Length: 424
Ligand SMILES: [Zn+2]
Image (cartoon, rainbow, N blue to C red):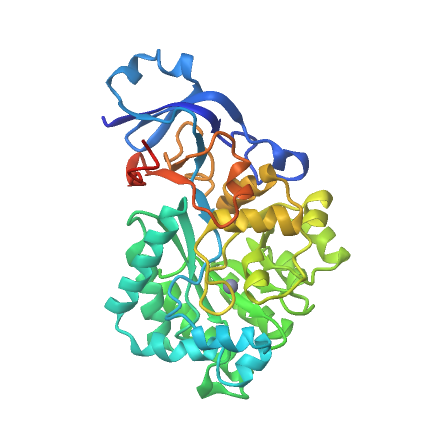
């Protein structure tokens, strides 16, 4: 039996707590143990507690030891909204936006989502997998140990199946990857002006095919003025629900389109973005099991000022999660610590609320709550050691990667190399 003892953390944050996603004041309860240690056996947490108790356990004596003295230990981040297989960087869009164009002007000029379709359709599976694997490595070095990965840049049958297969092939190497079919991301050029026909085709062909081949656990739709309206989103999500897919939705990102109402009515696992959520939407979410997933990186990268109403969502009792929303157009970041900084500074979440949103609540948003998101007996030992003495330093130092060691299922998968002169 392979054992690991992570010993002597100045702060061990377990997120130990009630079974469901955390709401209200529970969102601030981190299960923090001062001078804590954690014992791992065969990839799973055996126990976590004060160092004095854990180090005296008989099983701890034969364990390989990882010294966390003076540092912070957290559950690995769960990045619950990524477009992992998103093709290539959109650097021309970036420069056009800097010069003053907005998201819709860029799309109309041939940039935006549609400019990502060609590369995803043309690149081989091997090349797409190579790119995704590279991005997974960067996520891991920033403390992420599980992600959700959407398709949605192929849009035809071959492109979408290829994207989903890449996500499925990378699952467990070493991140847990939950695959989502986002066929209703944009209307592809071959269906230009015929969005209803495109939804018909998805419902008749793609959903049953992906279900048969078990290539996705969830489906997602962009419910937005420039993509699909609420009527089309409903048709698509109802067809997916009938096949037992879990549901997710891009809702109220650029305008108010009714996506949150639909998500709650259909029992979606998550409604994402929510920048234009109004008071009635916030109350609906607070009374539902749908997680409010916020993506502040997209607001930052688009150069906008309006952030999602995190404070109102938390204060009214909604379960809030955070994600990078990693994609080449609106949020090309792979860094959850940076997302935490934005959540705290721009959305007025406390550091404790942001940590909960990025771990246990995010795990609930993608159906991984039984195996990850907190450091409790029986769950995977997915943990990250940060080179700081207090967890609040993680969002405080925005844009700085303070990850020291990453452990996935009890294995050390990343350890930062020291800088010779600085670490002496
Ligand atoms: Zn997205």
